[in-house]
Structure formats: C-alpha cells, structure tokens
Image (cartoon, rainbow, N blue to C red):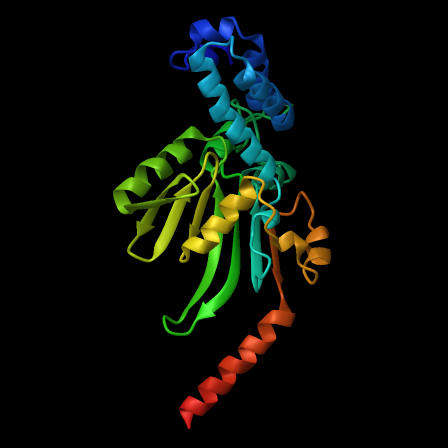
Length: 270
C-alpha cells in the first residue's frame, strides 16, 4: 500500500505533509469506504495549504469515489422508461463463492487440511481473470428503420488495472474521437455505438442522449431513473446483493409495442 502511494507521480513529498490524503487513500483502496474517502478528499481539495499536486490528485479521486457511490445501484443511473433491464453483479465474487462451495477454490499450495494434493483455483487468479465489478443494460425502445433495439449499457471494470487499461487503450484505437459528453471523452465505434469513459465507468449506447442522461445521474443530477419507475420499483427492490444475474421486463410498456409491431407485420404480409 505504501509503495503504491509513494509511486504516484509528483505526490511522494506532498502526501507526507497531507495526512488526510494518506488516510483517504487507505479508505478508498484498502477499506473500500468510498464515502469516508470522499469526505477526506474533499477536505484536501479545499485546503489551500496542501501541495498543488496532492490537491489535483485528491480532486480526481474525489470524483472517482463519488462515482463508486453512485454506481452502487446501476438502476439509479438508468433511464426511467426502460422496457427491459438486465444486471450482472460481481461475476468474479459470485464464481468464487460457487467454486468454494464445490471445494475447488484454494490457496497457492492447492492442498487441503490433510496435506493431500487436490485441484484448486487460486482466488487471486480468479480475481485477475474476472475483476469485472458489474454491468447493466437497459432497453428503452426499438428503431423500426434500422431494425435494432435502442438502449444504454454500463460497464464497471472494477479495480483490475489491466482491464481498465485495455479499455482505455482500445477505444481510441478502435473508435473515432467525437465531442465529449458532459466533459468526458467519447468515441464512436463503427459509426454506430457511442462509448464514454467516466472516472470509473464505461457507458455505451446508440444514442448520445441516453449516455448523457446516465452521466448526469452519475454526477448527482435529479433526472428520474429506472429506480423511480412505479412498475419496476417493487421488482428492483427484491434484488439480492448476492444475485449474479437479474432481469426484468416492463410488460405494461412492452405489450402495446409488441401488438403494434405484430399489426404492422400482418398488414405488410397481406
């Protein structure tokens, strides 16, 4: 932990004189207390006596911590008028639990209490392979002209630096840089999909406006979200923290669209 903190460019000297930053860094990376870390980072940002490099880094990490808190419930970032919603929650942790129950999760040595060798997967290896914190997709409509759904997806790469690095490197290579959305870098892939990189998330959609809505909610905007939907709110409330996959459909909005599409198809077939 100390080595990582000291390795931050331009901060080694300044951090020593700013204990609040050190404590905030610990809360963020070791304790996972993003609320506590954000509170301390905010104090560092407001401290005019602190080293300029430390204040700038604190501002960056403050934004990241606030995003972590906002992204704790993807439904609160999604548009209210979703037809369908799918959520994937911490696949690495869920798979770890399953493998542990099957007796297939072990330490480095891969041995049980008796000393007998057995097949076992290292938890650290699993974390590196499946560090994804979660993902969610909301379908908001259907484009009959292009014959494709309209919606927005959120990807949280987690704390695995390799995964985040691949995404941040791959988007500029595979996509075209376009106008930023709410100040965040945005790319267009194959002329169809927009991808925006926030401090912690990757937001993708075939409509810029949907990404803009997600980013504004992420920043604390008061736009209505899927969590406010009268029909789906009770269903969303039943989600378990240990559920790997969650899926729901707003039949009240979906069925009229399906009926209209069927009528259009029948009329065309005549």
